[in-house]
Image 1 (cartoon, each protein chain N blue to C red):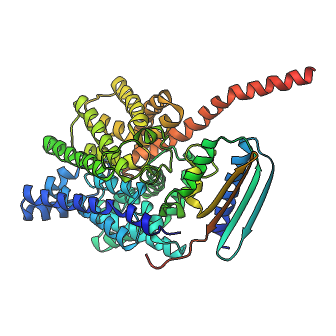
Image 2 (tube, each protein chain N blue to C red):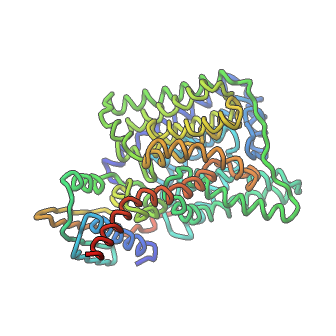
Image 3 (cartoon, rainbow over the protein chains, first blue to last red):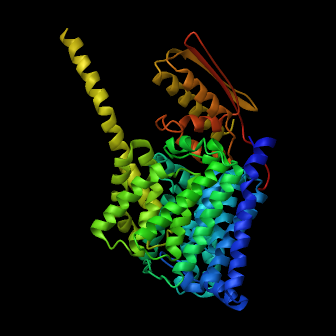
Length: 432
Length: 120
C-alpha cells in the first residue's frame, strides 16, 4: 500500500535537504577548482578501477570528488523522484552512505549499471522500483567489479566497456534476491547487509577471475593533503543535519530517549518511528561522534575516512545512535590499539565502519558491543583478500559474519538459566 | 494469490501466533481469509499482556508504511519475535483492529496485495 496524503507530505520533507546538499557540494567544487580541472578529474575518477582503497581525492582532486559525490546523490534523488518513493530511514542512510563512498569507489559510471540491473529485476518480478531502491543504491558496493572488467583487465576497450556495463546490469539484477536471503543469515544485526551480499558476489567473481589467471588485489591510494578542508566539509554537513533536525522537530527532543532505547536492529526506520526531525538530529550527532573519535585518534582525514564518517551519520536514520554505537567503536578502537597503529587509515576506516554491528550493543548490551567491535577488527582484514577489494562495503561483509557468529551464541547463553530451571523442575516432578 | 503474497500472509500468521503463544496464549482461534484483493487474518485467545503492550501493538499498526517493506525487510519477521518485530508486522499490514477484554486479545489485520504499479 502506498503512503497516503499526510504521510506523503511528512515523509517527503528530506528530499529538499539532500537536493540542497548536492547543489552545495557542486558550488564548493566550482569555488575551489577550475572547471577544466574539475572535468579532467571527474573523467579520471570514472575511468579508475576503484578497488578498495582508491581515494578519489588522490585520483581526480578534491573538487572533482565533490562533483562525483553530488552527481551520485543527484542521480539517486532522480530515481527516488521518478519511482515516487518517499524518503525514510533506508533511503536517507543510502543517500549519505553512497555520497560518502563517492569519495573512494562509487562513481556515476559504476552506479548506473547496478541501478539498471535492479530495475530489470523489478520488471521481471513485477515489483515497483521504489521497493528496491535500497538494493539499487547500496548495490553500488560492488561497483569496482564493473570498473575492473572495463578498465582493469587489459581487454580491448571495445569489448571491455560494454562487458563491464553488462556485468553491472546482471549483478544489479541478482542483488535483490540475494540480499533478501542473506538478511536472515545475521538476523538483521548487520546494518550493511548489502555489503555482505556484495562481499559474496565479489568472492565468487574474484574466484572465477583467478581461475582464468586474472589477479585481483586491494590497493592503497590515499591523499592526505586535504585533511583540514575535509574536516570543515564534514563538520558543515553534520552541523546542517543537526540544525535541520532541530528546525523540523521545533527543538522538541522529548522523543530522543526513546530513539536511544531502540536496539537499532533492522528495520529500525527512525524517521517512521520517531519523526524526521529527531532522526536528522541523531544523524548529525552520530557524524560528530565519528569526527571527534578520528580527531582524538589523530587519524588522517581522507576520502575513505570521510566515507566512514558520512556512513555513520547516514545510519543515524537507520539503526545507529550513540548508545549502541559507542561500545562498538570502543571495542574496535581497543583492538586497533592492541594490534595496529591507531592513527592510520587502516585502523580508522574499520573502526568507523565496524559500527555496522551496533544493533548487537543495542540488543545485548555494551559488553557484547565491545566484544563485537573487537572481533570485527580481527575479521575485517581477513575477508578483504577474498574479494580483492571489489566490494566497497568490506566491513558489511565482515559484520555479517561477526553478527551471525555472536547472535546464536548469546541467545543460547541467555536461554541457559531458563532451561536449567525448567530441567530442575522436571527432575523434581519425576522424583515426586 | 501471488506466491510472494502467500508467503507474506503466512509470515504474518506465524508472527501473530508466536506473539500469542509467548504471552501464555492457550486455545488460539485463527482465521485466515485470502480473497482477490487482500488477506484477512483474525486471531484471538486469552493472553497475559499489559496495557503498555496493547499500546505498543496499536502504535506499531498505526505507523507510516515504507516502500522497502514491500520487498526485503519483511524477511526478518518471525526470526525471533523480538526487537522491532512488532514494527515490522505493522509495516506489513494495512487495516487493523485490536480489542482486549477479559484477558482475551483479538487482533484482526488486513494486508492488501501489492500490485505492479507501473514502470518505475
